[in-house]
Amino acid sequence: MAEVRTARTNVRANVKRVPGPCSHWDDLDADFIREVLDLVGDKWSVLIIGTLADGPTRYSELADAIPGISQRMLTLTLKQLRRMGLVDRTAYAEVPPRVEYSLTELGGSLLSTVLALAAWSADHHGEIRRHQAAFDTDG
Image (cartoon, rainbow, N blue to C red; front, side, top):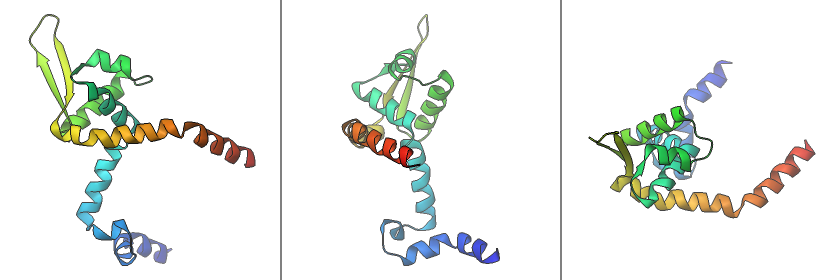
């Protein structure tokens, strides 16, 4: 069991010895890359960023445009995207209050990647479903 623990705690050192994309990053970069990918690779983040491609959007319009997202998940994801500097929130002093979300320049630079990933998913939907069905049938 101690050998397994040693191997697991030395993962980054082992990765650096093997050629590949991960070998180029130090521990801090690798941790940060995982953190960013966890957020921008999340289905809700992808859908929010894609929805904001058309410009500033009200919270209620975002909720309506993204099927299946709960109010809580929309709020949490927007907060995380704002924290990373990908989305701006603008509150207008009106009655009733109006809040709009928009992509920042940094968020806009991610847009083509997000849209390409979404397009790839749509383009290969049928093929992926066939593979899933075949896999599930083979058990």
